[in-house]
Length: 425
Ligand code: GLC
Image 1 (cartoon, rainbow, N blue to C red):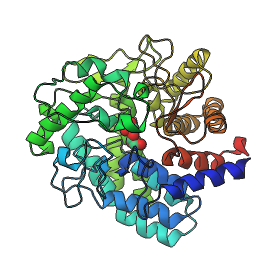
Image 2 (image 1 turned 45 degrees about the vertical axis):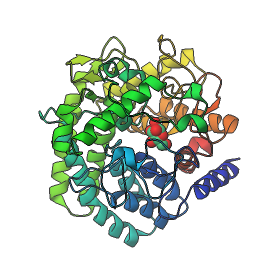
Image 3 (image 1 turned 90 degrees about the horizontal axis):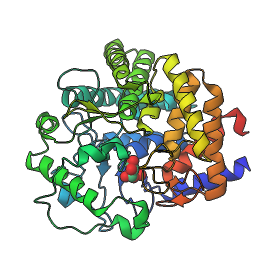
Image 4 (image 1 turned 180 degrees about the vertical axis):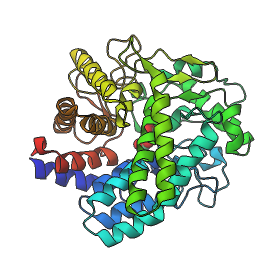
């Protein structure tokens, strides 16, 4: 069973391999996505180490001069996706979007480096990537934390990676829709519209893109100019974890300066993160920086925070919180609390399960000593695959496969889980 599943997962990854990058899935997402690539590289590393390094190298080859790593790289033309390069208008030699995505590359690179069987190659590749990843981390704190709070804000829901979460609803109401150029969505021709965002939400997504474009994509201006500024615990946890991991990697490579700076960013972030804890919900919550208020929305963003080296007592409380969620669903971890009124079992980030998020939560819980819950989450990932194949996401109650199919990072997570977890053998 295990080997068969790994072989199927490899076939999915090969199918989506475009040579030096992978597409998340054929059709729906025909370009390179930032955090998809970093997490997919973890899968490649189990059967083709050079290919794993190439995936991340290609991503960083398109890093902006200011340090930002864009969320999409439009390597080739494809009319099947909206918004394409002409809407973003970022004037890059190879077109990219103008916003970023969760900074998981630092974590992925450390992990691939430490497991590498070809050490010479690993040292060469990691050494070249180290300053680039560090520049991206510094970019975050310089541009998305102008007051130096220790936590960064996202300025577009797509940056979070949890594009359509309930967390953004209230803040999104303040994003206007006037002046949005007419457009035709493409996502709803590839996936079931009932699983996708609404048209009204799409207008607001595009309003923000047009606003940032009108400011010439100058990152020193975008944060303060955006009506949407949310501090997402999950997003910050990924960045903090990557800073902490980059510190360890930098130590191994003898770069004491990057190590010290990375450690300082991680420590400041962890301390600041505690301000997002909600005793009432038993998890972290988002914070809306533009109105200085907590976002009362029990989503997986505040659970994904366990990926960062948070205090053990917090990790324990999060494991308890996940256990409580399990009473209202059949598979872990739903992207929104099934007992909350906004929960939508099959709609994009408003209820369904993503394997990559499960993987990061499980990894963080394991490091914090919460191994029983960590293993339970991994086991649920495999139950979902057995039942529903390599989908983009899954219903937490009926295990329905949703969104795109033959999905790269889902396959990568299966290889990663099966190759590293004793319980799965
Ligand atoms: C969706 C997801 C995002 C992901 C992308 C490609 O937009 O919300 O997190 O990176 O698809 O898989």
